[in-house]
Amino acid sequence: MEKLSIFAISDLHLSFNKPVGLYDIDAQHDIEKPMSKFGWNNHYDIIRDHWLKLVSTDDTVLIPGDISWALKWEQAQYDFGWIAELPGKKVFSPGNHEYYYHSKKKIRNYLPKGMEWIDADYTCVEGVVVAGTRGWMLPGDPNFQIETDQKIYERQVGRLQLALEAAQKDYPDLPKIVMLHFPPLTKHASESKFMEIMRSYHVTMCIYGHMHGKSADEAIQGEIDGIELRLVACDALKFCPIKIR
Image (cartoon, rainbow, N blue to C red):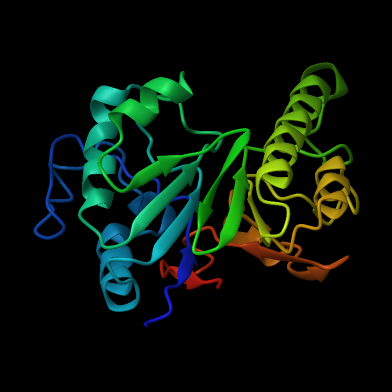
């Protein structure tokens, strides 16, 4: 029996303005917010080509946030429709640009077949628990403001704990992967409550996105306290899904 794989890639930043197929996308007419100004020229084509070479129908791809630029689901559906044409099961969690996302129940009803949305909860794929939430900036980061960010940080920490508590109760013997959008450690924040919680539940891997360009070069990656940290923002991966299991 062929062993199935788990891949990861985040920050797709799609913005199709109508239904599109995998091929023959007109960058001038089919894209609402071109990423070419960031040097991401036709990045969806590069993602597609790598994805088709690597991912099989029964594999799983984890996508932790910043999937679409859309402000409302009516437009985001075009981006998810494009992703749906790519092989594999997909598991999404939110990022800081998911403006179209207001209700977990609603978005789960909207998603095409073969897609899951997790936020403050978990799913099981290929014998692994995958728990997810958005995360947030960390105390110590330059832009962190106690007045506005502390409550959001604490809330997101609580949401991760809810997800892992439920996973531990239901599947105590399965290995655990966490999907965050924001990194759980940075060069300015060498500790966080996200890391504390992941250690306490014996999480083996945390994938995250959000960091691009020069900030990606400073991302904390590798094994920290028994947890493998991996940046999976698509530009950091050269727009190629990475196999994580």
